[in-house]
Image (cartoon, rainbow, N blue to C red; front, side, top):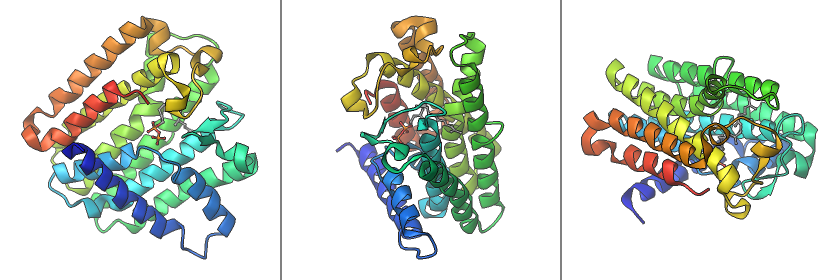
Length: 292
Ligand code: GRG
């Protein structure tokens, strides 16, 4: 396995061990709620956001273990957002990560409450991990990224406008906030914990924004060209929902060119980090070229 993939696997192990210790053995949490949280949290996600938190902390001179509560918190927020996004009131999806969605398996009431529990629990685990202002900065950044100016806002505009057809600026707003903000928040939070300089933070923030755009563009392309078995979810949902995407605006080849441009800008941001930036460099290329 390539070095950078081993690194990613190591970050995943650290995050999963910490999540298990935090959530699964605590008798204060109802057994059934532990089961529904675990169903979604341990369904085989890529753990992209935790890897970004931990790698950016290390890149900025910190120790990964100090950023671990934030890696766990952001994965819990990401998982809650997928559970709620799959609900009949939103995307109405039956499969996620290759398994029936949480509401299909346990009912809508349990899916809504499991999402709520993960969201609030995320802030508890992150605040427990705050020892000084660097941690508080990270929590604040993640709250901003996921809330009314970030992911929830992007999702709001997406669900309220879907089916109406909209312009490129609106589509970019949705993609930036719904998808890129949490990715951006992850990389910024790791840098916050390490006490990174303003200049480093600005570069990493732009890197996060650019890989976030790329991530969503590739998602749009895979929804048209991908394989549902490989993706673990249905394809063609954007067309079915009459969504405006990078593919409807630019065509599949134009969308791939956009992904290349955003990735090139992300790589430019890493130049001053020289070879220390290799993990983030490989990750950006992987996200551009991914097939699932
Ligand atoms: C419900 C407030 C709220 C927000 C939902 C997550 C989201 C916002 C919408 C999901 C729609 C979607 C498929 C967006 C594309 C980007 C995305 C979040 C994909 C899934 O992320 P991965 O590929 O998932 O990192 P894994 O399963 O690997 O963790």
